[in-house]
Image 1 (cartoon, rainbow, N blue to C red):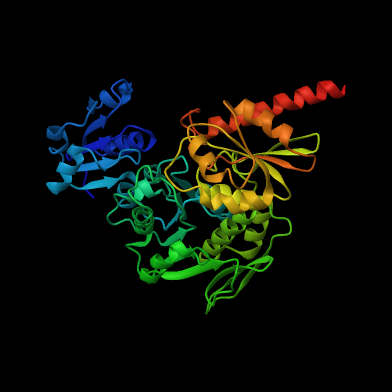
Image 2 (image 1 turned 135 degrees about the vertical axis):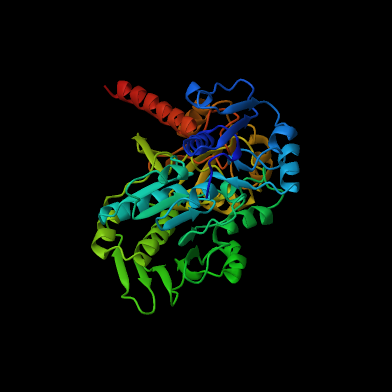
Length: 453
């Protein structure tokens, strides 16, 4: 794809926008960057190389004067200028589409509402453990476009992909797509669950029968996608053993006509929780299809540890275990985390409401929770939907919530932070929320230690 001399607009100057702008400037494109943030400070390294900058509302005149637009995932397609550009036939693509057009290595792309980052990271760990050169990036932190400049090219590119990134793909075609699950999320961006599902389904829209779609057979929301798939489906399940796919009968097993079967013990697995069984199944399936040796897979499953803010142990005080699952930013993730905790618990939830129903929490709360402590903007709606099924306490801050949960918990219980909501009403992001939780737990630990001495 020839870029030299082309007029290309980068919409949004976040992490992926900056990486795209850098890539385009290096290849001689005439780059304009637009961002709604009027106070954005653009580094001189970009402007000194000829990049034009426009801040504030996107100008129709500027946007429609381009040969192509590269859209950052945080920028929705709803602005008047972008709608007009599409009406005039100007290509609007995502950074992952731009990257795909220039990557020569086989691509493994992972999406789903929950588990994307853990599965992507585990895949990288599996492949590296087998001595393969891999690039791990995408929505996970390093923009996919950064893989293009690697010399030599990696053996595999492994990418976490979000629904936002998939909205503006064209030729993007992973050799292996991994679709973990789809539950209510981002309904503040999508008009309906069906629209959200269609965005996720785009990950396999360009695949052929020479490619693979690894998908969760236990998730009813994926069935319409599987029915329409042109890729070779390699399903995974914790309930049944497919003729071609992966299943969990205490071991992680893969079977496929024409290939030796695979069996991986999970007795010493580093990941815990029922949701992580599914993440491991998906990652092992991809490694199996890429002929990663069984011994390398076994070792990687045993020595891979979970990621921060995902069912992360935060301490044990007076017999109460504290668990930081701040990444549980939607109801489906919270339900999975509740299922993954042994014994009784007190749940801390709430934050910025994302528009979905909280009804799926009713049954796990009724069976496992002593109480629910609510914080944030969504607390009122959550209380209205859940008060008939669990004892509820409202808290004005996270520190107040942890103190309340500690009082309500019994020795042997867990205090679980799994908010089922976004963090932006009270925190910078979910990482900030999780770090605050861990700091509060450490403070409680110091107090307990001082009383004991």
